[in-house]
Length: 236
Image (cartoon, rainbow, N blue to C red; front, side, top):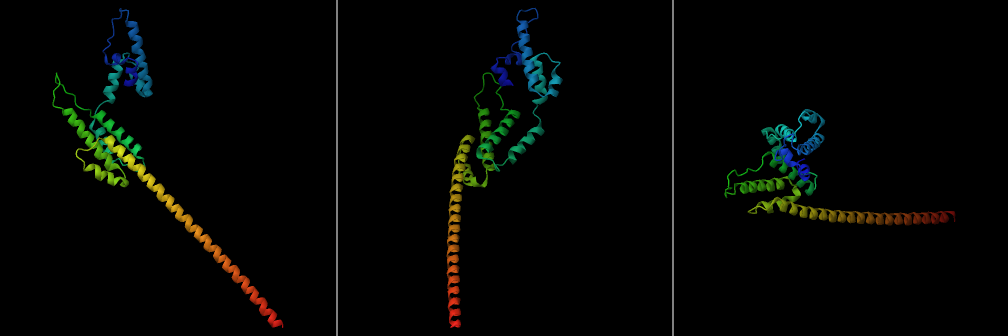
């Protein structure tokens, strides 16, 4: 919603930087149309039960503040549930790309619940505390991403975790994707070899069956010939 409103250059109405002019002002009608248009966008984007609870507000700023007050609260229970989901997330049957996408979604949600602190000094200090916090979170993400990968990636886990400093998580993701392609290619080759061996065994079995059939046919003919000779000798 924020992106859509900013693209249409209406974010100032929501945050109040574009204040409402006096009713007798010639610009008031234009401001009111824009304000109601933004309100309509918000009403349309939320569930009907939520929209019904904010319909009585006629200023976009008040609507946004009401929604923010209700849904943007950072409660410990929600953070705890999200942390558990991040910690317990495993690759399972997902591809590396799907697994990384899921991880990244959860990380961004956590960053939204616990945003990076903002320096309140003016001018800003040079302690680089925010950069240190961001670096710690990046390290946690690398470790968590690696730990959730399947057993086929144990070699990657061992090789990356001994590095100091650890690479960025997107670089680890790229390495995991490369290893995934190698594993897939190896499995395809193994399957091809197994299929060739199976075909060879079947061909050999078929060949042996033909030999056995030929031998049995030969023996049957030989026995029949011997029996005819014996019958002729008895008749004489």
